[in-house]
Image 1 (cartoon, rainbow, N blue to C red):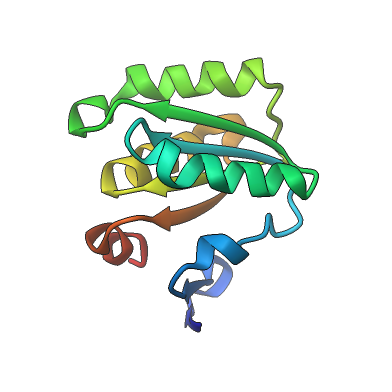
Image 2: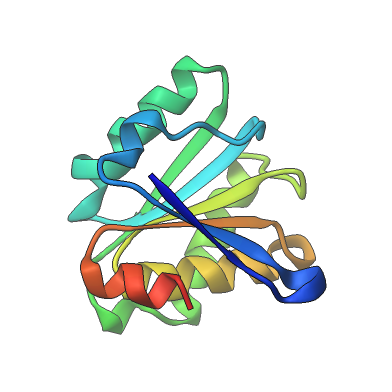
Length: 135
């Protein structure tokens, strides 16, 4: 496992690079987690991650949009907001994007705009998404 620090003053963050890191991922102390993903990735990565986080006592919502650039829009952001509201997701929560670039963009927008912004974690599932997520 490797970690790269991105020094941006108050906006500094770390990038963790590790193979098979989903099996050891923890909720970073957050007990309210929304995993945003797409319908293809959900059963492969998002649901197993959600189950592990639930076993650790976290309240977890998994919301999956259809795959593809056409679903990166305000309609699907609104659907995600509805799911967050229905699950009583608060400002203390964390949004985790599990998937490729479209998922990261869409989930990042939702996280930034839900209740003026909540914590956001990206878990890319493709090489391109990993590069995109690190910038």
